[in-house]
Length: 320
Image 1 (cartoon, rainbow, N blue to C red):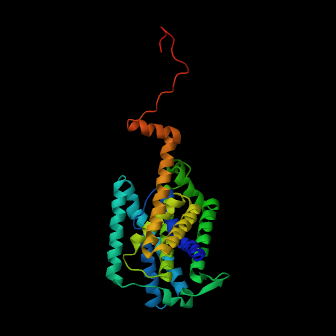
Image 2 (cartoon, rainbow, N blue to C red):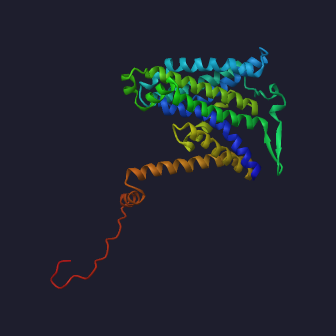
Image 3 (spheres, rainbow, N blue to C red):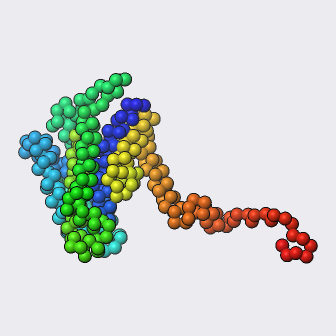
């Protein structure tokens, strides 16, 4: 049980990285990129190509890939997302679904359907571990990924709080019209946020390829994990993504003690429980609290509370 808890916490670090970009998109741009997981896989495949075909070291390949993905996110927002957001609620969903399908089929056409991994390129880091007291094994790569997640989230927090770009992003997230009146370009802030989100997705994809295997169609599953971590931790909260990722990772790890199939199911059940709780709490707040909302629900189904009994029986000739 303790080993499963440790592994779940470390797995939550990966979920936090891929969820941070999605949380930034939702919280700042008010846009749900359903191709977020496919962008992660694309970053991993580009890194694999630079290491296996070009022959670059892994760290150098990552350093070259991340700026390319940031530029891709910047252009993608300007060419696709901005226009889609002007078309209402449904159009952005359709655009990102089409983008995800195009990325999946494009990666399949270029790299094929075989599974790929960066495990062989990082040496014994892929399997090496530390042995703690009590026989607990902590993998070096999962621990490094968790440390990267903490550094990434802290860096984003500092950037949003102290830098000019961060203040522009926060102002745009609060009120785009007011930010425009103060001289902040909402379009540039949104493009910068999208570039950061795509970069984080690509980084998460590389880390996924290091600790496992990927295919061109691995993106949708990663999108689901990222979305669940965002909802569990709180939409728009960067610190909450780390908490949400840890909760999701621990629930999957503990579910794996029951059966391999229960691993993913337990994470989905925790997500549904948190989602129902948040929706119920919001609904109760809109109806004056839990007691008032329960009374309104009973009346909606035709059930009314019984009238309170009279303190005394009415006298003769007295109206009740």
